[in-house]
Image 1 (tube, helix red, strand yellow):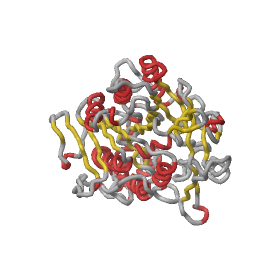
Image 2 (cartoon, helix red, strand yellow; image 1 turned 120 degrees about the horizontal axis):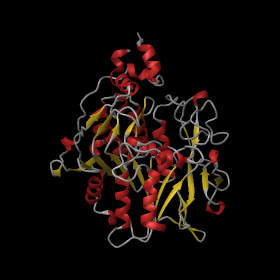
Image 3 (cartoon, helix red, strand yellow; image 1 turned 120 degrees about the vertical axis):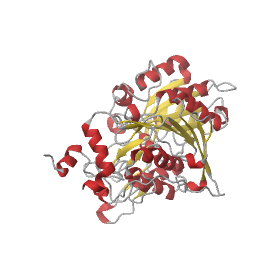
Image 4 (cartoon, one colour; image 1 turned 30 degrees about the horizontal axis):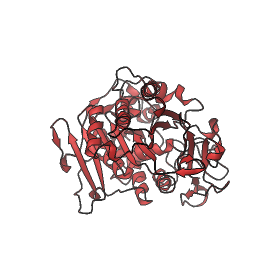
Length: 450
């Protein structure tokens, strides 16, 4: 007979497992009363198709023409490191792009899908770019992101570009300005680039410091884009026409991180040269860790809780914050990013505030369906709570949901929803993979099994 300790080893989730003993059982998510001091809104559409939900959310926000001007350069960043529920719904992305291309008043600008999925020098050969999707397709003749972007290119010509940001470690180069060409800028205070560093505040050997990094890239039209400073035109920056959209999926990530969605999606903007292990390289330069090795001990919690959220807050305030944050949650992974168990929550969400939206998504969609306390944004021991709150503390957004208004439409009832209807429970697909099911059960009920 397999012992419980052997089961844990087989399931491969030992890192962070000590948290399982301290996390209490699931409680039903309760809506905090909204105050008169509303700061931000969350727009949602549920129970429609991904295409219907996207169109409804844009309508609730006032229409795409209020968000995007006719000659903007729009850069959207999906997370394509995984596939199935691990990547944003492709039908929703296509609908969003087409709404811009067909916006009232026309569109003469450019649209760019850009991502660093940290899969080596040829990322388009793997990850969600090349794997066939079982879930989150929503376009019958499109199997993966390569095929989606080929379709977009065919339909929209030079108004559309796909750009793969590549880590310096895998063949990109370090640059200091658009005059050096395309590559990554390291904000370490050299080469005329300002020093933008952040330390974890830990004592002694636990102290770590990271720096901000960002890409400079070129579209198919030859437009040069500096992610931080804007469009490079005749030796000057035009920052007004550059719009950045953070376009994320919603899933379980790990026992050491909890949820993955908008905030964590910014790791796909930064350079992660050096790898995830702070004890085996993990450095961008001699003194500075990258955005993964800084907060974590490879696949386990790092010395200071919540530092992934803190570093992203610094990034948002010193480099660039998205003009709009979108979460596609047609399918969400309860214990994995590509395999069941999954929940069909049939939701689309948008906000200008990544903290408010990640909190809302975690509480009313992911945790409400998984029951795994690693996903609970209100549990102080939960890594999800720690990094979302830390992002807010360092100026990344609003954590207090009493200051957040929900504007939500339900296709099933054909009406707008009330605040007390915030929880979305989806149909579950459990799958047949015993390891995945065991992993879910251990995370859900581990406090009672150990």
